[in-house]
Length: 202
Ligand code: GLN
Image 1 (cartoon, rainbow, N blue to C red):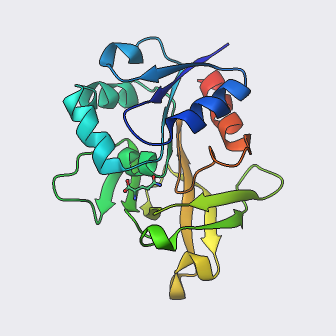
Image 2: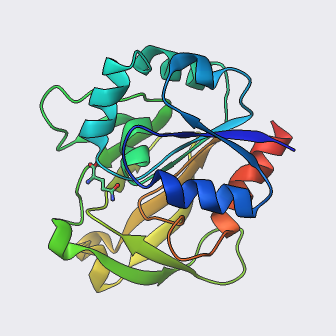
């Protein structure tokens, strides 16, 4: 079986661990650089990206995480994890450091404040029925590079998109996947399964 790490500095670590274990993965909580060794994949949970990156810096993990991305480790980032994977940020906190790797621009807190959190059904490329998207102070993807596949676009009132019509909320670039929402909440394991397909193929 594959061994997948969950970055366990802050955020909804438990939910990701439960989802991965339900799919039969061996899961390792990652807090120290050496805990990245030998992993087949890594999940960056939702939470607060500024707190996670601050702790990653403190624990000496920021550069090892960048090296892991560069070495081709499959990584799945949800919400704050998407913010961390983005090469470019809009509305970042001053001095906020990311990991990068995903050729996208992400607007942090794009959908507004905690009180603007919401749930909605979303069509996701490759899945035959909608996913229940849980958005909590969620980022959205402003633009994507040519290697990035858009997996889901949020449309309608919840998108706050005006003339633009929709907001990109799930992407994949090679072995990197990211969602604005929280597939680890609510028991729908299909996006984790898609990620594990990437891990196994890598
Ligand atoms: N807004 C948060 C951030 O920028 C993300 C929120 C979440 O992960 N639910 O980190």
